[in-house]
Length: 287
Image 1 (tube, rainbow, N blue to C red):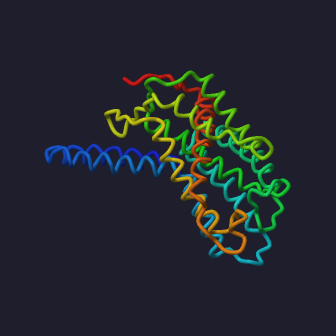
Image 2 (cartoon, one colour; image 1 turned 90 degrees about the vertical axis):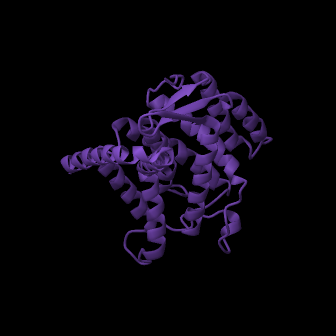
Image 3 (cartoon, rainbow, N blue to C red; image 1 turned 30 degrees about the vertical axis):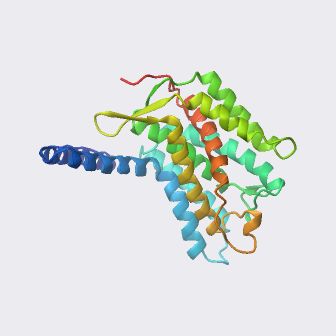
């Protein structure tokens, strides 16, 4: 299997070079289309684990037997573990990226335990593989964000200009994580955190390489775009009844747009964790 994947990757690189040679004489628009397709392929590769998890949520909601000996949530947990093992064995995911997923699983499960205890959301189905009211598959939903960030960092060869010091980003991430807990008992300071987010990351640009040339975009815009995709995935998760918010107990409705702010703040935590675990220097400048 490893050799087959290596052969496929090599053939894809050859095909990419062949296409590039053929379309170059047709002008800039043809080159743009080729690069845009390559961008989509890399994004799909980076989203592999998260995409498979969302597909599993829908598939099990639609077709998983209601009276199966193994509960649906337990099946999702075991399937997520199997996917992780397969990604590692096929080298589609590195050991460093697996560390990111483990760390996200721990951090995400800790927050899930608290949030379900205060009624922010619930997991309505029974299962054996759970901690309190939290089935273990839920940690993999957070881990899929870490998996995406770790893989996209490597696949697009990130460089940065005007990046804030790591200590500053880590302090902001800690404040955001703490507010997810404390706002239930103390004043919610998320608007101060949004302002701090803009102040810290606003000047920063991320430079990413699709094929040969590095392109650039504001890092803050990247956070927002990923948060939007997570919000769409959360709608799929609640539609499949993998978890439910209080307003969805008597019938599904879309997750409020206000949740985008929470996911944007979570993106900062995710980003800082990936930069730490990958031993990558966020201040690495663009060439």
